[in-house]
Image (cartoon, rainbow, N blue to C red; front, side, top):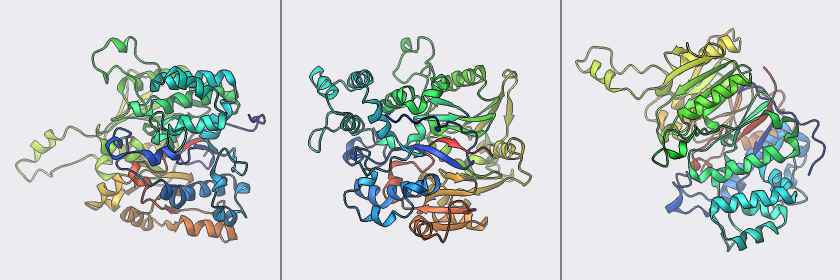
Length: 481
């Protein structure tokens, strides 16, 4: 295990402060074993082509992150990396692995804690209990070398022929395993059984890896409501579920939590109480969105671009006025349309007198202008450039799920043409990632000076998984703004 952990810091107080460290998981072999009959059970919309994701899509994401966060690991090495057919740069169990402590691979962290025999026994026992393994298999896994065991636990395969349990293809969406809130880490509780193993692994990594040793007292776990297991039904309302896509740290003292298909009211209630008791934040805003697969988390319908700018799905963001009163049925349509977003804000010490906002846009403008001190009017960029049917089509392929690597520099899928057009209209330059990497390598451009830029990322396969780059990142350290 690494011993030099004194420089590793945990602190995130915004969505747009310059990104300094994050957790990721590169696509593993389990992604290539998702079958059509199980795809939706494993929360994928379709089966994906693993080699395309690895070589033509996700690898560009990793290279770009390294240029921004850890340039010494990649500067001057791009040609060598691309020519290596063994892909050793990307493999945590290979001597040539990049081993960045700023773009941190979860598989490597898992392998490192598995070197500890006690931790290994506990993890193997827990995984085998979840997956219903035989005692003989459990013993075999305990005796497996740590780096190999990490791959097995994540992919579900001992080798290309022998699968011992299901893969966890959603592990690439590291946002959902935990959220950094200032110098605390909130561990999440998934709503779907397909993600149970991810949560288990995250818990062991955060509580056992030396990188997080200084922050162990700051790791927050959400309890289930008392005696929830006595309630009828497997998916009862008393069960606490919360996923990272529904949590946004928008300022040092303000947290957003989405009340969505994946995050329960019980979990929200417990989270607010714990965060206020521990004095982590002073303000929590609850954003209730329709409980539909289309809007799985709040970060699928809006994310922040700059201090005074957000990208958002129009139909979710604004108060929806279905008619202007000129038609006889207008008032009936208004009454019928009850499944609309709601925003409620709780302030520590005043929890019994919550504040209501008329719309999500009103909340986001309040964040920009009051929490972040923007002197400019808040601007909104709309999915699909607010054009039907591209607004909903492009939201489905994550037009609103953008990752800001610094204020005003965001990563998004290249397929969302109309949303990109809206960015251009707001003064952004658009650069394909392949072109940008070449300019970084040549010195023509620098991550330090880049601003007001939408970086387009290839997306033919990745977008089938229903998650963008906001989902594929767990920021651990950002500069304060």
